[in-house]
Figure 1: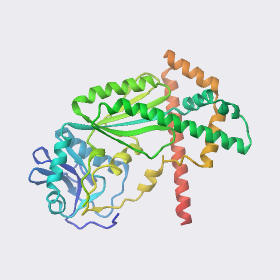
Figure 2 (figure 1 turned 180 degrees about the vertical axis):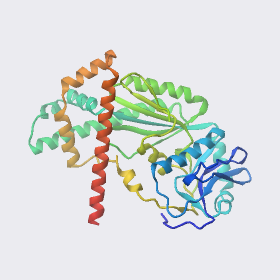
Figure 3 (figure 1 turned 90 degrees about the horizontal axis):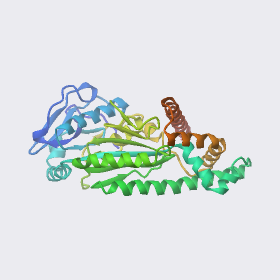
Figure 4 (figure 1 turned 60 degrees about the vertical axis):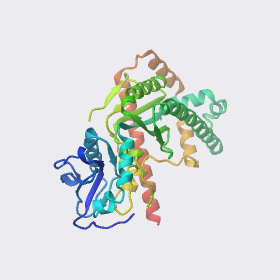
Length: 242
Length: 125
């Protein structure tokens, strides 16, 4: 990652929309700057004057980037850029050379939204389940030698992994049918069952809501779900390298 | 930002129009989205610390010992009673709140542990 101060003409870039849906956002950008569309043919990049020096990825800044995209998303399809991208010449470095690809991607994403699902075990509930269902774990409970503690912990870790695999698959199987695409974050977080995004036709969102309600009520007390969206398709944008 | 909570005290499904927790915001805005060539990615102080917080290495002796401790601490009669109460739907609102507060604090502890670990590593390098 290049670390440098941007030149004065540089623009911070939030995302790309259709030119005819793009709109300025007064003082809605990073550091209170206005968001202005830079148009090229059918496309518009949402930009604001790049803040001086380095940007801190404070929560408020990340949310600001997100909010600019959300407001644009209310008006039409958006290709979100990752946080922290500054371009010296938005048209020549980005919109012109990538025009056809960006148009294709925008068309593909028209009428589609991202829904983000995370699921966590309730720690006490899942551990109690493991103690009830694994005799060896139940027997080792309360033993205190270092070797026994490590064996107990290893068994619990194995049981957790097996349950996570099983439950994650069941959730994915249910939701996959309603989605055009999905992205599962593989990096494990303790007691997390699943962290995934789904690309869904806007008209299918109510069906997805219903599926989430069913999944969550079926696992009430054991797995807690967080369900965020509809979001701009952050997880479903990519261009060919080059 | 309005967060609609479905369900009763069990709080099993949280619905929100936009990400709220720091980890969720980081996941979406820093880790996803289109990346292009010919750009200057402004380096940001603090990203490493934010992203590492909740990511815990699963297979280590420390983790095993922690799991063992958690299991040994479990009060099975209590979790069974809580489970039954939830099934009957007679958990009161306060009970649910206390539980989720406990979870939040747990997460904060883990995050600060991870940060401490990172700082120590950085310090050694």
